[in-house]
Amino acid sequence: MRCTRANCTAMVCRWVIFGEQTRVISRERRSLYMNRMLKGWRNTNRGEQYQAKLVNFADDFVILSRGNAQEALEWTRGVVTRLGLTLNEAKTSIKEARKESFDFLGYTFGPHRFRKDGHWYLGASPAKKAVARIKIKEKVGDLLVPGNVGTWQDVRDRLNQTLRGWSAYFRYGTRTQAYQAVDHHVAYCVWHFLRRRHKVSSRGTTRFSDDEVFGELGVLQLRRVQLGPRS
Image (cartoon, rainbow, N blue to C red; front, side, top):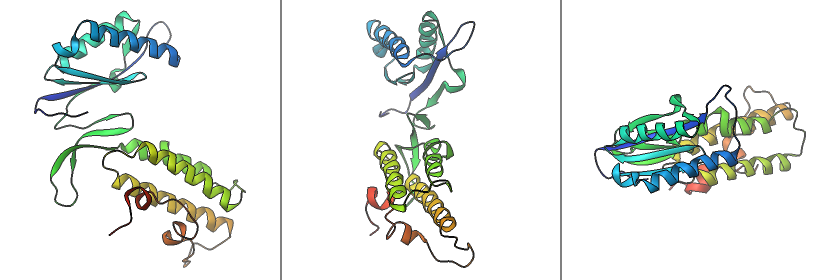
């Protein structure tokens, strides 16, 4: 998704079922509702009318518009109401795409600052929530628990599989800070896990350092493997 004009706006939306009781709708029904909305968008030439592009996945979608986001939002509200749904207002917003960031499908899109010289550019990076406890960090923590009595080789292989899967999805855009955060968390969790397993005191020990974790112990280091070694 690229914004090439200063007045480009993004409308980030999610809808939910609405009626006497709120309930979870199946993936098939979500797909059906979205297909109906997309058909209406195409048949009424809304993209041309609003100078907009609609991008969706499941029940999440973004409309990128050149100055007509509010009109697109009102049209969307009308469509979803006729479908018996309602927008999740807490997760629906209009953003100045060149000045404000927005999250979509685990990524943050919008202005980013280049760390070396401080200049701003439009780009994408893994969203903070994608790196947070509820995502990859939780998966790592669930694996490296005292109750896991598997061999280190088995534990390491499962850990690396998790890290490869996460990094395969988050391989687009600016990733350095996100990868560093995950690497740091993984190194700490492995250190804590092996220290308890081998009954090593936490004071004054140099065992299970980052170099050892990502070297001899064979844990995947995202920054080094995905971005290449430091020059």
